[in-house]
Image (tube, rainbow, N blue to C red):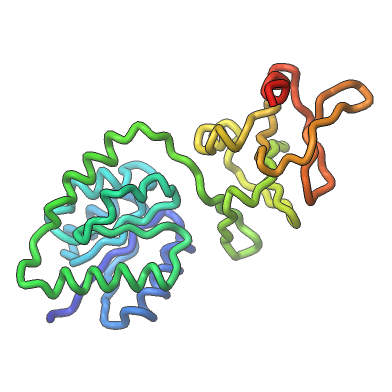
Length: 252
């Protein structure tokens, strides 16, 4: 078999680097020809380098991964990479198409590599017959994106925190505080944007500046000024509930 060539596409440099390190370790014969940080670069690199595989982040600025996949699916294999588990629908379970959930693990990547090798070694190494159908499913899905992970930076490192471990989000100045059991992190994502991507059955907006994880609530109490407050298990913190959101807890 001739040299297999691949492109890694993700708008996060650290994530591109991490995936490249794992691919180099697990598939040393693979040649990574380019790293793209947006959809336009992917299209340009595919035209220039004619890769066999593109590891493609679904959510990228400008041209999304889904839009890119529509344009390149007849030219190479596509492995979708996503931080949103609702994209891991049954359609992806086809042997013809693969996906990786962030953060990518070596075990899951090994399975994807096995599939890719099997496909590329097949005498009938034609474009994936199901890809256009899957792209159409992804485009037409009316399920809102639900965040599984929150990206936070600690020094030069990028960490992924499962949303289930987060007690609350609170807007402060130009940042949003992310509170876990043992630490606070700061992110730049506004509360309004987070609210649109979090599962509304688990994360409730209780104040214009706060969203709480209801599975982490220990009790609802009143302050000396009679303001409703949300108290949590494991941490010594309380979040005020504005009057417009008090009805959420009166139904509990």
